[in-house]
Length: 352
Ligand code: GAL
Image (cartoon, rainbow, N blue to C red; front, top):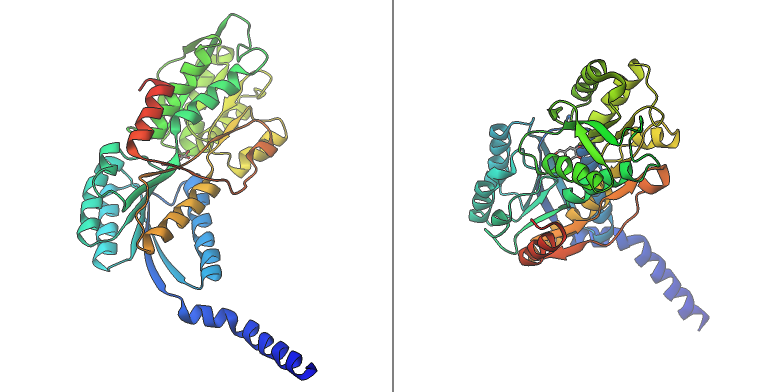
């Protein structure tokens, strides 16, 4: 009896020590092409790194090998189209695309469909009509930009003085925007101010200006506004944290004090901003949850690689962040929606 137990134990030890290699031997190798709109972007760098490391983690668990080839679209649609066409010509098993210009998504999807290569779109939400082209094999994993705008407005509205530092009953602000035609830029611009207007009157100083998500441009826009409007300027709305960090540099340069005589609100919850929040040197941001978006994108990609059909939309939520703990990253469930469900929800919530 003892002998049997011992040999069973020995057998188990052999099996355990061989287990990973056996799984690996059975595992498949998948080639995945990942097109990023531009590497020079703080938020997309967080997203890209998390996507790569999560695929590696999943491969260790399921024994498959996920070979990711990343390409930098350099913010140029022609360059990116060439990269995507190359991926298709190489016969990749799946594409993950953060398109430079999502209005051009249709052509990408039709070419991919021709070659039977499923597509996971990320970060820049395409038009619903695009999602109808190749149902089951095309999906968008993202967050609803309207929500980030609403949260920005709520952060300012939630301050004791609602952003009205000089107490004249009107919040005077500037708006630093992302690139033209970008859904995130448009929705954040619109819903941040619309939301704040429900609490207090607002007035934009000058025109909204494009910083194209870039810190140096954000700094330049904020510096000009600070010298032009002086103490009249009470709130800086920035479509992202990158540009808001530029604004912080400009504010420091002008000798103004954030949260005392001016407010700044961004989106993304970049680590640098979270650190400033901890010191009380930034008013608020909205976590653009790259952690959950990248993990869900990878999990949905694997469903597609297994031949499954998937929903057109997989959503995560933005999170309002006025202190570091608010921006903590933890795995959360996604919400799946059909095109009709999505459109009905948006209509009911926003009347769009
Ligand atoms: C936004 C993000 C920006 C920038 C942009 C690129 O969601 O907030 O920082 O990365 O995507 O499309």
